[in-house]
Length: 106
Image (cartoon, one colour):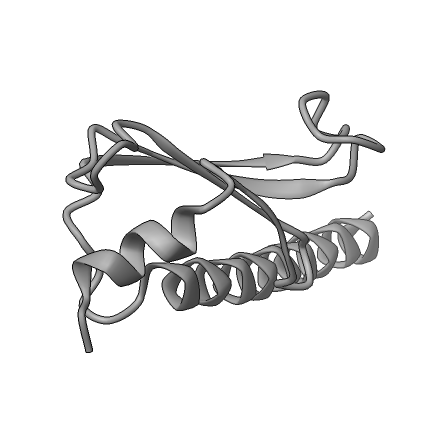
């Protein structure tokens, strides 16, 4: 019984490490989109959509980073979708990178 408990604890720790690494990769992708220094993005919420994102074509599994209200002109709210491996899938608004670059003239 103790061995089963120990295996379950180790599996939970392993899953937590994998989930943390996935979040870190996704967060890095978001940071690359927002640039340095990032604009004021308001309140952030993050969700792992493991069952798939119904608002995206093909319903891929993604991390959804939502921000609002932001200081980006024409984008009061922003959503960034990133795969668990850290690849950018989509941004809302679609031209988010151009809008952020307009804030950073360099």
